[in-house]
Image (tube, rainbow, N blue to C red; front, side):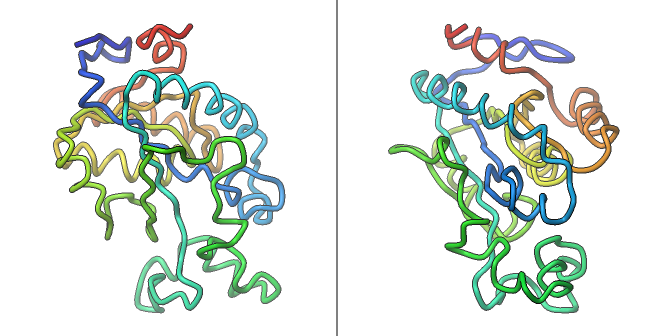
Length: 224
């Protein structure tokens, strides 16, 4: 058992029962020419987050912590995207952009597309788990809950994009499913105004879990 510095209180965890959940570190959300960039979102903050993952992932793997990637995508025929009676049809950015801009049809977050791929340099390695999802929440319609429980995992470190959308959605569900969600605040990038990031961090520090940073994770695993 080791202790991780976090807010509001340190968290004692067993690395054999801990996983790093890497949320949607894909071209769509962090790379020039990807979906967020095409939609006009500021992705400048993603540069440092990608660079940090290049340091963080090897350290976590070497510590024996399970790495689980969540990867957002849709089938080419959009059969898993939801029709007009689904709220996702109306609110999910890729689906909206592909309807509004015909030249983008079939290119955003589609299985096998560049947009949906994990960013170069931080791709999954042997021993990592990749879970495809078609909703913001990584637990919705996936085997994530079963995989975590089968491995006896209780503590979940979260990184990725976007802090206030897919990270928050998945980490909230983790809390409700009796896991311990811990956000690594500098290993995430948000979408929208700065207050959205602050709101997510406040929620997890005060109500839904814990907040830490990469320096504390490196200290935990002796990799400063």
